[in-house]
Image 1 (cartoon, rainbow, N blue to C red):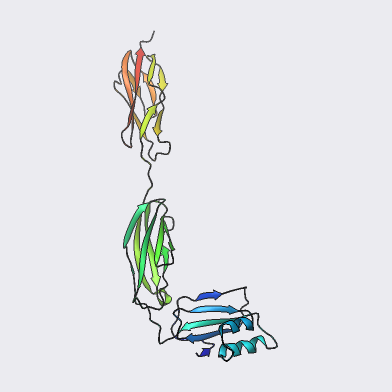
Image 2: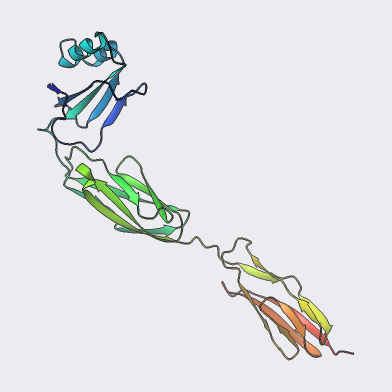
Length: 267
């Protein structure tokens, strides 16, 4: 097992921190070793020689370097050891796929996509993901190659997945988010009957259910506007003596509620 103060073999897209006990300054020794048994690059922090001895035999170069460092006149607060994957065993990723090129959902819900790094023997299979519009959708890794997409608000976004050295291998998923609508289930009026004198007026108020319905628009209409009229706000004007009916109709679902109107002649 060789040791050097320069990087060995291929460039790693990620290095896994194995042990980190305390924050370190920039001026600490770092040793890189090519490990034929390693399947991923790892970095371990050793705070004293005893910790080094737990992982390395006294006759190894790492132990001897650590012994010299910790036993010197100005011992470091720690040393770092990076185990690099052997160049002979490193298999570079060549392609990245995602199981869904497009996905859609309702705001407030989540979806899931799974990526695959090829070849299957690739040493480095780390995949990152970013959303082109986090107001519409966000993405987070699940640790098994799959990603959870959170649908935030209506619109479109592109999720970009990256792998390989310098994140140069990419693929995308198009996301469409539909607004989370609450349908109307009914409507009622605050009065079921009205009476008045020609020339007078009154007011009707419509209540849409449920209270959190997305579309609460209501239109009003009089069965006989020569007797009584009604505007878009529910204001009723008594025109002449007679009887008619005013109907409120919801825009969503066309639910209706009626109010009987009786108008007396003015004196």
